[in-house]
Image (cartoon, rainbow, N blue to C red; front, side):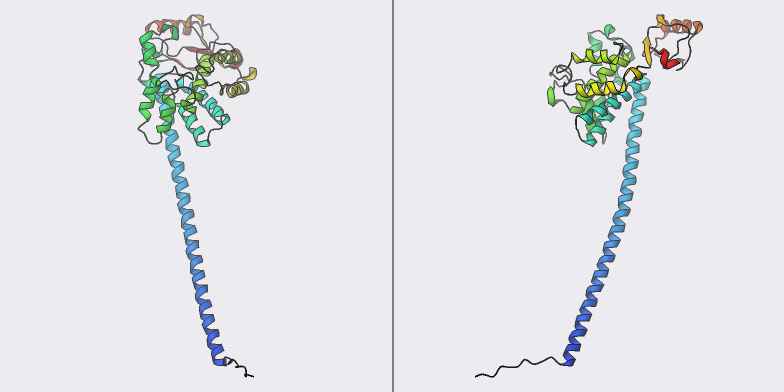
Length: 318
């Protein structure tokens, strides 16, 4: 029977040496861990600093962008007085419709901004055409006027951050059945923003600007006959909801467009009266008397009034 070999036990010196080695290794690991933590902390501080700087920069860029949009609005307003109020209403409505159509938040903002400056191309249209009513436009005038979305898009498409807005503006006069301008797009070929602005713009034009209907409900009925021909019928239920919510009997139209010969003493102007040559004839909130009316009628024959005369409704004036 073989005698088992006994393993040699480590000496005290070996145990002490191994203990020192392990302590040294542990210390190096602690130093590496501490250095890593310091580097991580430093990186986090730098990242936070850069993030704050980027946030400030983005806020500044957004402010510049929105200021540019407002400048464009003011330019359009100078050429076509009353257009800014119109575009603000169309923008508010378009934002609501876009949200209901479940487009992305970014696209909602683009559509709302496009609506604010959707009439930019009118700056290039002669005032003699802009001041005519639909009945006064001849065939050549109509061809020039229907081209304004393309002109507006051309002004924007080479400017950084405006390309997508330019595309929305360009196709706002496309018809859902494919018979519109400029490219004859139909259905979902038309950008959703263009379809939204088209129906919001039409409602605001027939109800507020041209005042073809006495009530918002009547204007909706008039618009309804153009669904799936001029306009996307899927958008109409959301437009109906917006109009009922914002233009109910308690929030009725605050002003009325009136022909000059129907002016009477005591009426209050809802908007500035500006001549074709950009002369301020009477400011907003002026109460008319016989002398002021005679002055307006006389001036109308020499230097016609831009955009018409709007007076406050009795409830709004009181």
